Amino acid sequence: MVHPLGTTGVRTPAFRRLTGAWATSLVGDGVRTVALPLYTAISTRSPLAASAVAVATALPWLLVALPAGVLVDRWPPRAVVAAAHVFRAVVTALLAAAVFADRAGVVLLCAFAFLLTSAETFADTASQVLLVELAGPDDLERANGRFVTVETVGMDLVGPLAASALFWWQPAACFALDALTFVVAACFVLRLPRVAPDRPPRARLRTQLAEGAGFLLRSPELRVLVVAVAVTAICASAVNAMFALYAITELGLAPSAVPWLVVVIALGALAGARISPVLAARLGAGRVMVGALVLLGGAFALYGAVPHLAAGLVAVLLFGAASAGWNVLSATRRQRLTPAPLMGRVTSAYRVLAWGLAPTGAGLAGPLAASTSLGVVYLVAGATTVITAVVLARPLMRT
Image 1 (cartoon, rainbow, N blue to C red):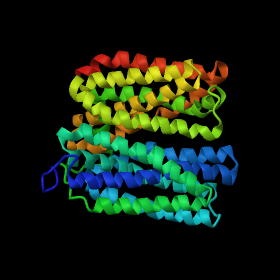
Image 2: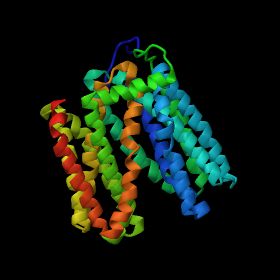
Image 3: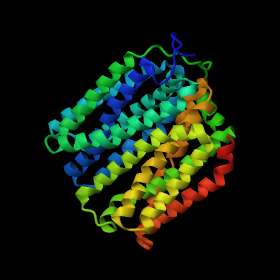
Image 4: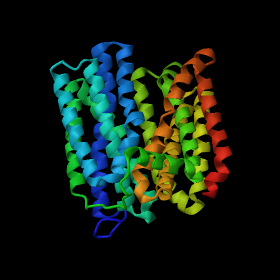
């Protein structure tokens, strides 16, 4: 069930407000993604501290995401997103104060990181419910395309550039800006119409957790998506772990120039997010999804096989386009296959299963590069992604 006006689609005022909430909060996420590890590195000079903060940032996706999905299925999604934004605004404001007073030690940074990502699991899952309900079934591809576009601009362009400008003036300003973005995002969310999707009957938390994971694992179509996302997440994690080192040692880039490769990836992602729904309407979503995986694997292999700047720029542009196209269409398919009463739980279980294995790729990349070469990491990741696309092509196109 949608809000009382019954109007859905990406052109409605309600969806534009939701897009505004995404845009502002994702800029804040982009600022913090750069500022938090940078502040940790500079203030502690300790690899162990940097690792601890990174683990604290990722851990809620394993520990909190599943119960968050159950609670999102019980509570009004608008209220969940607004409360999560307000909570994160308060936490980041306190973090800004601690950084400004030079009292943000490792334990405090880990605590803040864990709390912020924990709230993110609620906001992200509830936002998916709002997206589905406000966009409507006919506009899901376009809605997900807009989300990936906004995510790319906020997380990979505007946020990091703002962090770079503010950090060298005053690190605390980065976290203060992050807090402000959450306040603005909460204001956008509170102006959304009331969304009342179908709700499951109340049951014990453990029972509802099992229902979400069970539906995901019993559905052949969703299982295919989980396998594809998990494999590509492992490969992308390996690629990302060696990305800067390969750019410096093999492509000959100065360290200060490496972020511009990320900008090229973001430009590719903007193109991929816009083009993929159009191609899906003409060719079929399954074919475009398989093509995106093949293109992603080929781009990984190109980057590792041809250590020249021109080839590297082409490869990273294709990284962005292929990954964004896959993300848009795989998210749309998951949403279409998931009943509304299970949306929160299935979304959370999907991300735990798909993202929980991602650190494996980073862990394997180092030993593989040390025993062979940096380029081999990209060749293996590319071959694995292409093989996955070929093996899963038939079920992906049949769904």
